[in-house]
Length: 150
Image 1: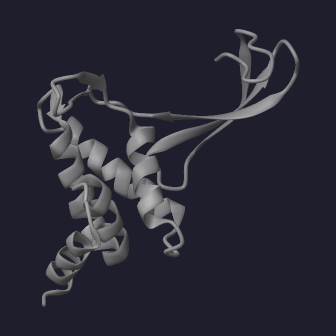
Image 2 (image 1 turned 30 degrees about the vertical axis):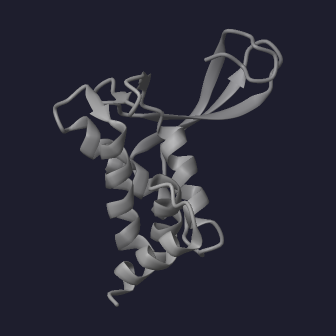
């Protein structure tokens, strides 16, 4: 593992333990070059996923990008980071176990919306406003009414 401080190629694992959610391994490492300590996380990856965008472009699936989008939707909602982590892990597992290597971006967005709807209605509306590209306040109102069931 390359050191994030000095870019030395080798580091020594000092401690390994499962993360809180048990979905990854947390490793404390020490650089053999500069002696700095840092933490890495390892996750199981069942398959390489490619996201097919609306314009036909193909991009590798980026868990961090999905996690960032969901975290932004959940900002200041009092949702624990561990819940967001589990939510993202669940979405990633659904995609990996679908049997397809290429996943439409719309599928990723729909899975995220479904998960957020169950987690927090405000985060759900925030995510939907970006995902569905609301153009004006009226779009927000109509969507919010559909969420609360008016």
